[in-house]
Amino acid sequence: MKTFVSVVALVAVSQAKFCPGERGGNKCVAKDNSYKCAVFFENLTPKRDLTWIGALPDALKKAKNQQEVKEILGDDVNEESFSQLTTCDEKTANARCYTILDRQRSIKLDSCDRNLINTRGSETIGDYLCGQVRRWLRRDDDFKANGIRNLRLPFYYSACNGDWTPISDGSKDLYFDEPLCCTPEGTYFSCDGSAFNSVC
Image (cartoon, rainbow, N blue to C red; front, side):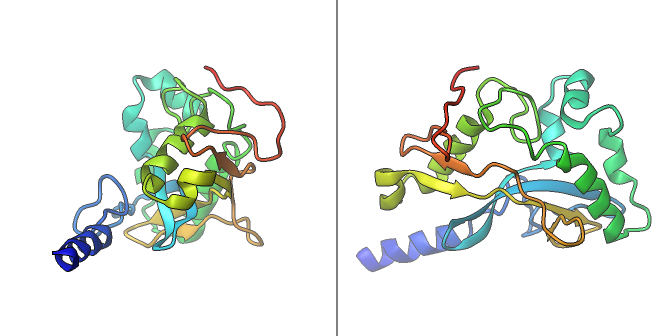
């Protein structure tokens, strides 16, 4: 019986979706003539190099109105612009995502601002992310004892059914400036030990 349970558990892990809207193993990549920009957890689990956090324009579906979309993207980008990549040029997709996400990467994790990760602003970005980390690692003994420290959050793009590719300035890949640190309870704390905001 233990063998059967172990096999079922392995099958369940191997069949876990890459992203919430995945269909047929498509990893939620951009469709024809479009691009997407995403943020992931890097090496959160031994079996996944990348663990999904969210993507644009998908995350915009959670926004209540166009004002929220402008707060997340800025005035110069809209949801429709993500499906205007008629040339399917990866350099263009990378450049567009870099422009959008370079503005987001320096947001403090104790911020309550709306953004790609935290579309509601009802809790700090760090607490939201740590809640997701806890969901993934709730059975991990090391996480239950120690939490997690210095988890990196890389940005990727996908263009025209292409794989997820690191967003880069040509010499280095784009990451969220601040690494993520979480308690075993799934709440954020500042990795460098400095004071931080914990309430929105």
